[in-house]
Every structure is written in C-alpha cells, then in structure tokens.
Length: 509
Image (cartoon, rainbow, N blue to C red):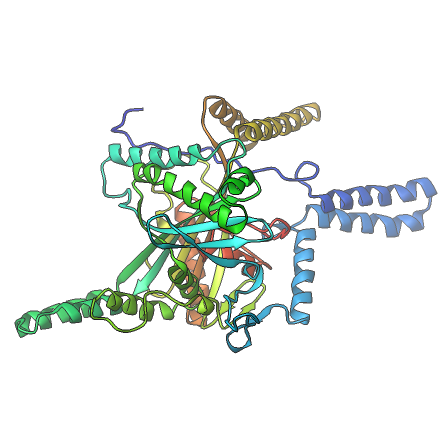
C-alpha cells in the first residue's frame, strides 16, 4: 500500500470461551439434563411422565439457548440472583468519609475505595529523576501499575503519511510487549471527554492580565470567554502500564525483592518505553505522583470537583501561590458514598452507565473510526478505556491453533449435517487463518476489550445521554451492550485510569 493512501483496519476476532461450542459450563449442563429428562418417558413408557418431562426439558433448553439483552437466560438469572442478594444484604452500598478505617500505627486514614478497588494499595516509588511515582499495588493479583498522562496530536488534521506512521508506531509499541513470559501483562489507554465551563481559563486570565490593559480589550476578552467557555471540551488521556511481579520474580529479586524491588523493575520498564511512545506520537506529560493519581480517581467519582481542582492546580503554578499543593491527598481519593444498581452506578452526586463494546466493525475502517465515541457533549462526560493484554509467541501460537481447530471442526460438522455455511462463519474462519499467518510473520497478538461510560450530574438527563452514546457507537459501526448487574466492576475499568482488567468470574461482562 502506498504511504499516501490511508491504511484500513479489520480482522478483530471474538474469542470463543464456551465449554462446549458456544455453551458455557452451566449451559452444557442444562442441555445434558434436558436430554436425559426428555428420554425418561421413552424408557418408562409413560404418557403421564411425558406431560411433565417434556415441558421441563423445553424449559431447560430455553435457559441454555435463550437470549435476554445479549446474555443467555441462565447468565441473566445468575446475575439477577446475585444482585438481589447484594441488595437484600445492603452490599450494593458503600460509605466512606467519616466511616473510613484508620491505621492503628500512625492514626492516619488510608485511601478507601469501594468494591473491586478495595484491595488496591497506593505506594510511592522514586522515578529515577528525583521525583516520586505513584504505584497501585494489587496484592491479590500481585501486580503493580503506574499511570502517566499523555498528549497526542491526533490523526484527523494531519496528512495520510504521518497518520499511517503514528498508527504503525503504536502497533510497534504493542508488538514489543508481546514477549515470552513478559513482565508487562496489561496496557490500558483511558481517555476522558469533559465539558468545560472555562473556570480554569478565566482564573489564569485574571492572574495574567496586566493592570494597565485597555478596558475595551479586557471586556472583549471577557465576552469571548463567556461565549466559548460552555462549549469547550477538556480531553484527558492516560496510559497505564501493569507489571506482574510473579512473571518478573527474578528481576524483582535482583532489585531488592518485595514491593521495593517490584516498583524498581516497573520504573525501569516504563523508562524503556519512552522512545517507543514517542515514535507513536505520544508525549508523556508526567508520570502521576500520589496526589495526581488521587485526583484522577477523585474526579471520576465526583465530576463536580474537577473544575475546582483544575482552577486550584492552575493557581498552584504561580510562584506566589501559598495555598494547597496540586492534586488531592490520597486519603480523599475515594467517593463519599456509592450505590450499585442493576443498570446504573451512582457515586457521590453523579450517575454513570457503562457499556462494553461487544462487536467491532466487520468491514474495513480507518484509524479514526473511534472518534464519534468521544464527541463533545454539553450535558455529559464520556470515558473510553482500551485494555490490551499482550500474549507471548508460544501462547499465541497455541491459542490461535486452538481457535482454528474449533472453527474447522464446526465447519466440518455443519457440512456433515447438510447445513449451509453462512458468510459470517466463512469470514470468521478466514480471519482466524489470517491472524495465524500474521503471527507466523512476526506480528504480535494481543487480547483486548473496550468499555465506554457516560456520566451525568442530573439524573433526568441520564437516559438521553445514554441514547446519544448508543447513536454515536452505531455511527462508528460498533455494537455496544450495557453491562447489566456489574456496573460497579465495569466502572473501575471504564472510568478510572488504573489499568484494571475485567473480573474473571463476573459472567455479566
């Protein structure tokens, strides 16, 4: 392809994780039970047994194969029962603030986060440049995550050659992480699109306006900011890098062992990434320190705090500033209260609904096809998270071979039963073969998912904002599905730049 022609992308392949075909373990059990129950009247030669067994077998088949808003009926029931148990026991509520626990050793209050984030611990590590780096430690998974704020010049307003080069640079960065037993197990890109009323801009302008400036010029500038401020949009982009201490145990041991050694290895890994990120057009503004990390968490839970913190951070850049430092104290990072609903997550004074991208475009698309998802909206803020999990060459070879075998077996079974192969099934088999060929040619393989969330501070505007998001997703040729019954877990992935992966045992996602 010529460098003057825009590159197109396709070939996203959905994983087949069923126990048997497309059936989960529970679904396969339901089908087996239905088959056994349906045979009981035949062996007993009882018509009265048939009136009981056949409807029961049909019910089990409906539970195994029926679909409810994208979920199988058995998955829907499991989620509903789990949610109702949480509601009945008040486990869908979280209260912090005055109720947060305190350390007995130094009588300080640690960072108190709800739900899946309660296990995380915020650590400090030297960044090698004289500063401090925030590291989120997950003791259950034994992982360490560092987060940086990046800027990106974008793809829409540049020539095709540079656009292709930047996308190839990002692909090369991901491919460099696909090493055998690599220490980096997850790379997450998180972007927020936030309405801006211009408070930070006005604060900066007031402090930098000369006292002898012409009144007419000051008035014109004030009117310009009043008109443009509400229509402005803030874009924040974060990159989270997660290291597995188990995979890097030898390097961690060599760096001193324990949390100190793991943090040192993580710092070494992220310092080695700078050149690759620059090749992709990403400029690292800063690696978040503990207060900046706490601010990114706090503003996700409490959107109304964003403008005040932005104005204060702008003022803190003034050498004469004598107020509070930039960011937020880590003990104030979490929300005061949250409530997990069936299809919505309430946190402080806001409501969030998270969607998972269940289907990427099947046709060829350009590199800018995700832009509609972050279209500025005056009544809502949007967050998009792309979670990548690099796969080593050996594991990628085995998984792609298994995927090809599953699809070929299914094709042969359909041919033996006389069923015609659909065009979708044929293209999926071709895509699986093409992925294996690309892997053999030296390309990397990654598992990834995308989640997008919409947050409003007025409950009445929530469904309108959700409808707008779904319309924009349709414009991008994406199939999105509301995360039913697990909005709290989905919020940690979609709205927070902490490099969290999807929960392994929550079947609703």
